[in-house]
Length: 148
Image (cartoon, rainbow, N blue to C red):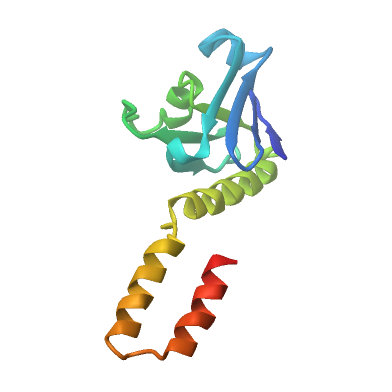
C-alpha cells in the first residue's frame, strides 16, 4: 500500500484501486468530505505538476469518458484544487506523490498489457504441427508448458 498525504487530501494505492480521501482541511471545503475509489484499469493518465518555491503542486487522475476542464495559464493548481480527481500537495509532500505516480504508471502499463490465451496459442501451435513446421515432440513439450 502506497499512501501520499497532500494539502487537500490523501491518495492511497493498493495495486488495484486508487483511493482519494478528504477528511478535513481545504479538500473538504472545496470538493467535499469522503472517499473516492477508482479502479486502476479506469485511469487513463496521471498528471503530476511539481510544487515550486511559491506554488503548490498537484496530482490528477484522468478517467476514460471523463469530462476534463482545461486550465488557464497560472491557474492549474487552483483549478486542480476544485477537481474531485486531484489532490494538491506542498513541496515537502511531493516525494511521496512521485513514488505514487511511478507505482500507478507501472500498474497502468501492466493492466493494459495484452493477455495471452493459452488455448489460442495451443490452436496456433497445432496448426504449425499440422503444417510440418514443428515436430510432434516439440508440440507436446510446448502443450505441457502451456497447460501447466
